[in-house]
Length: 413
Image 1: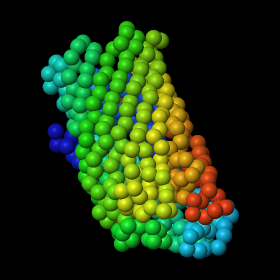
Image 2: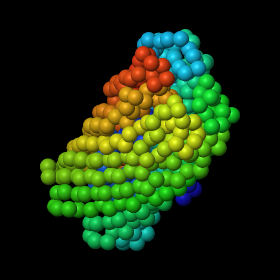
Image 3: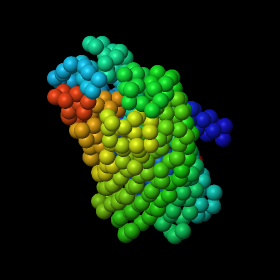
Image 4: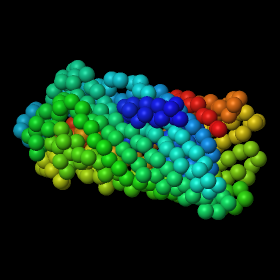
């Protein structure tokens, strides 16, 4: 029990540097799930399953997991064209600039226990993200200044209760506790557009706690077909007071609601084929979804945001049980583009343009109920190009590519 609590506290206190995958949510949670491109709403296999569908914890038994992902994004922006500075224009220095910091560690952990024949209690701890940039200020700097960038870190703790109300049918609920930290630098030149220029940039790291809940169902539909559904409400977060002059609604940065639906088919011996659909409502969060508007003030209720659209992500997964000890996995996912080409200026800070993810993974069963799982993924380069809304005739192109790998240890007891 001491080990279990130590691992969960470690994961909770080490939130990931926020990195863009499907917008700013990870393409999956836990090494097993990530190895199938995040598909798993209908098929749970570890104690981090509540991150996708709380009901899945009903089917993993007595189990503990801990893992870490090494994540490497490559982010840059390019500017073409230019013009004279004036009070009504905001031209950027032409050229290409790359963001620093291309290696990050993302932890995860989970624990689940069967408390009666039909009920389980557990907890999943995980992280996600989408906004981490740091431009060094060379070649004229960013936004007319020197070094610039933002950093958002998020961690989630999801205690979970499930009830198996029929032989192979379960519902689950997770009260979700969220923690996030944010910092921004190099944005002082946006001061005339801010409702509070002293709470716009270069104020160090601010943090916020919040809460919400997630509910789900998972069960057998036919002999060879499983289904799953889950919904997570908006996570209501404390405001970033130190950045109330940047984010709409005086520093508000709630975490959007999302939906999952999935099927898992086992009609081929030793194989599973999975299909998941995920929908994320970025546009409903003003600080994320409000379009950039030079006539409004940053920080006001209708202040500019990043202009992100809601997105739907389709995920395909495959799993092959080679023998009693060895399992192989692969996955492919595609998500809609959250960033319109009209929103490139502010999204220099948050170029969450990724759409495709290609993944592979494995699990090796060891002795004593232990297992080790691994995963690797690649997300090819995506770009979004549009006009600088405050610099007519100037084009900005955002681009990113990603790769990563993870390993985890599971214990069935």
